[in-house]
Image 1 (cartoon, rainbow, N blue to C red):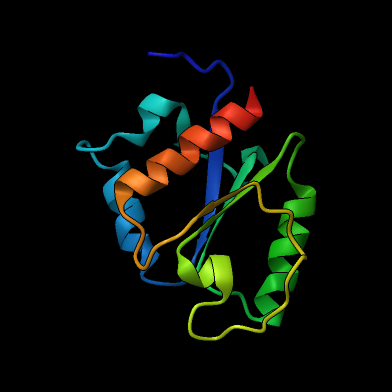
Image 2: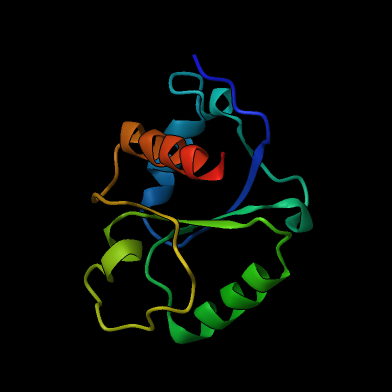
Length: 125
């Protein structure tokens, strides 16, 4: 198995049902940490922003401020149909955050989320 050197420390904005599948991805069955992806202990340490759910304009403004304060290099992963395409409420603000990886599905399976992290790790190295 390939070993990834730098650790991805993530913070997630989970405002939809995708959070349940993310919790499964963190569990011992799937074990996301073996891919070098761990939760950030402090907001300022995160270099991966995970968006789950559609963002309204007010929340998007706060998320963009947080993204701009993240240390470089920084990455964004959109998880779920709502984050990737607007879900039931398309037509929101687009292009505000540069998304590196899209993980589609409603809800996305833990395997798909892990494949998204692996794709991000390949972009990272």
